[in-house]
Image 1: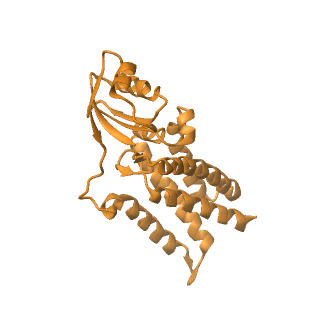
Image 2: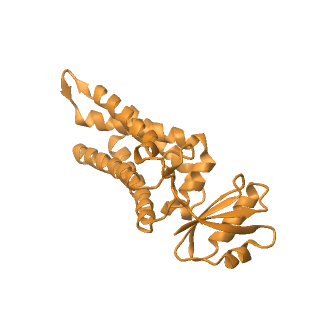
Image 3: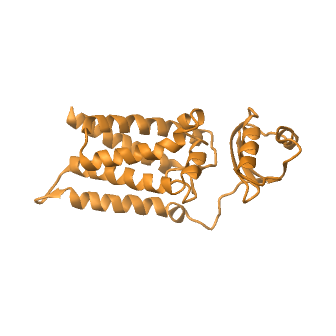
Length: 236
């Protein structure tokens, strides 16, 4: 279950971190997205946590109140919500298909290689527009980012490196194996969040777009795994 609370008393980024750390110290709380600007904390929990218990861990400086069920805007359709990621996939797919045609023949390996280069370069770009925002969002569900604080800051650069490797044809076998490992780790956290029915923001396009986590995130990761695995088989 996910709830949004009003939090007062936060005056800086350090306050955000303290409130978040305090809330996450409660075992029943899975994630806490704290915003000083909005004066809010969106909390995902395994079971209902009394307001008094949360206030206790925050101390006298911060005050938490006004619980509300988090709801997605009803007026926004599925297509409107995921329009940014669908457009990006569409553009990358069209360019990859056009570049994979050679003398009237479609080259599947060339298509997958170009698609992967475009995917990683584009998605790493959006993540780097707000590196801290991405890292904070990613740490809410990724199994590695939850345990290693700096992983959220490293991940966009890992995607950038893979994009360059695909674009330049650098060590194809090693590049595809690295992709399988990276995307498998990523998809585990996504699946865990979906199984727990957590309402959290997907960090696939960084913090630029407010995209909710859904099956489209699983499809995105699974597609990358399938393509890289297919190229590994073809190269073996």
